[in-house]
Amino acid sequence: MAEDSRRMEEEDRGPGAAFQVFVLMEDLLDKLRLLNYEDEVLKKHNMRPISRLYFALPTNSGEQFFMFCTLAAWLINKAGHHFEQPQEYDDPNATVSKILTELRSFGGTADFPPSKLKAGYGEQVCYVLDFLTEEVLKHTNFTWKRPVYPSEELDEEVIVEDDAELTLNKFEDEIVEEESDNDEEHLVDLNILKAQSNKKNVGETSKPEEILESKTDAAEWYLEVERVLPQLKVTVRTDNKDWRIHVDQMHQHKDGIETSLKETKGYLDKLHNEVSKTLEKVASREKYINSQLDPLVQEYRAAQAQLSELKEQYQQLTTKVTEKTRILSEVTEELEKVKQEIEEKGSSITDGAPLVKMKQGLNKLKQEIVQMDIRIGVVEHTLLQSKLKEKSNMTRDMHATNIPDSSIGDY
Image (cartoon, rainbow, N blue to C red; front, top):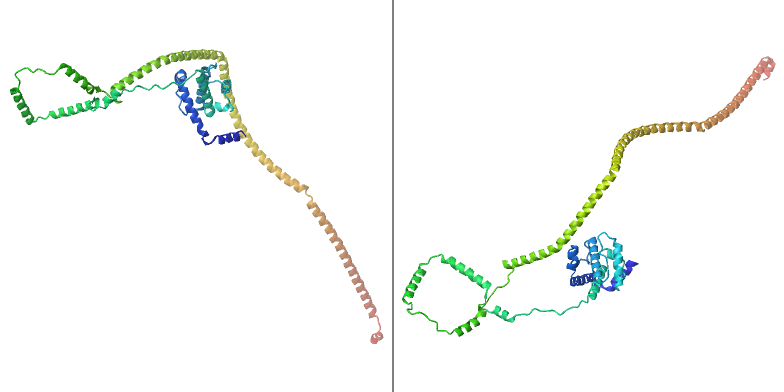
């Protein structure tokens, strides 16, 4: 639900809301420069200057959050409220809650979660710093002054633009031309020599016998000099390639380095002393801990040696156990086979199907015996009858032989 509400707010603000943070960051940087944060914060904490996109885009979350806390603490103190300078290893939640408390005390609104400030970048971070800078400017009664424009010298510009001005570039060009002419003078021309000799002869003959005297007025001469003097002025134009400018820049940089070195040397010495003291404390504490833990270390070493021996015994026993388990598996396989055979034999012994078959066979055999007895009785009866019949026939035949002949004739 919170994300949906945030999206609805961004849609209501328009498509340019995503770029509002960049505009806010530029205004914030200009206000920080007005408050001279470079000398009061950056040099004090040995930090690099921030760019116009420092708090607008994510680069290094930890460094950005520390810079935000440092600037917020400096602005709160500069606005008249006491706020301790946060350290690098402080709890970020506590630091953010303190900053939001101070922001509300100035009359600001913080309708966003504190986790937005823990990221070290974003619109909320720029908003908090911009609000604090506004409060500092109000507290210091900052007002804009009228701009002071440099005075322009029109006469010198007219002189510079005059064609009769002798500039350094023209002077250098003339020097180069003279050098080229001097190079050509090395070539001897006979005609020129003859002309010069003729001029000398003529000059000797036309030499005036009386001393020349000037007939010009001194006042007119001074007036003419004053009139021509601006045209004879030599102006040297600044050229970035000139070595004099480089020398001046070197001296300026040297002075700046010396001044900054004086300031930073004290901080470096203080830091060196603190680091040396902490190192001494760490070394002494390390010696104390080593002296206290020496018997425990000996016990640990003895226990470690005993542990190594037990590990070796354990490895030997594990090898024996593996062999025994292999033998046990073979024995169990044989036992399973024997059990299967016994079960098969027991199942065959306890099975009553053969007994039923034998009983059925006995019953069938008894029935067949009864039938055979009946058949035997019938056969005996028929045999007895045949014997009796045969006997009766024999007796009849015997009686027939005793019959008289008369009776035979009658038949």
